[in-house]
Length: 191
Image (cartoon, rainbow, N blue to C red):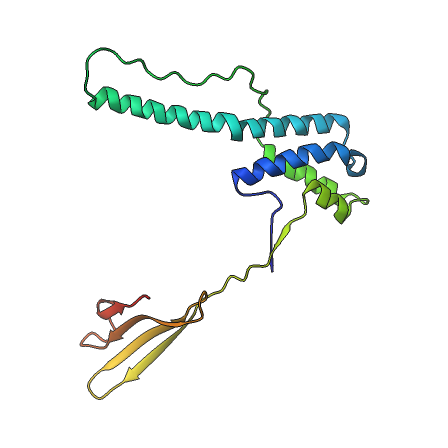
């Protein structure tokens, strides 16, 4: 059984996890050994990260699409008169940008929390920093090679058992000709 990180890989999951961690960190401050200044810095990091995910990145993507559409219109479009170019989104009150490395700082902080003597599973669950066991069985197909010798010709087959369905399939066959089992004689048979 492998273990997945507690930090989500999807942006939607990150939004949920970051919000939860930001709310739970001050509650667990006495048990985590984190001072008020570090909590303030962590929450500023998280606020900026959330703003990037929810506001800045989607707006920047929209701006890029509008700029591309405008460029295509101006190069190949029809019509008379002028068309104003799209204005980029301006953010009136963006949070201050912290130093790069938000996720590294969060991971380092969580490692320090977990290394404390009074850390326990209840604290980890409350903060959302316990890794999730991966109970999904990731099957690997089993392959085998068969060589059949006949009076007229020889044949080699690669068969397999599907890891997903357990059924047996044939990957490829080759008949020995003048070049033996040369790559040009293989026939792929997926399915």
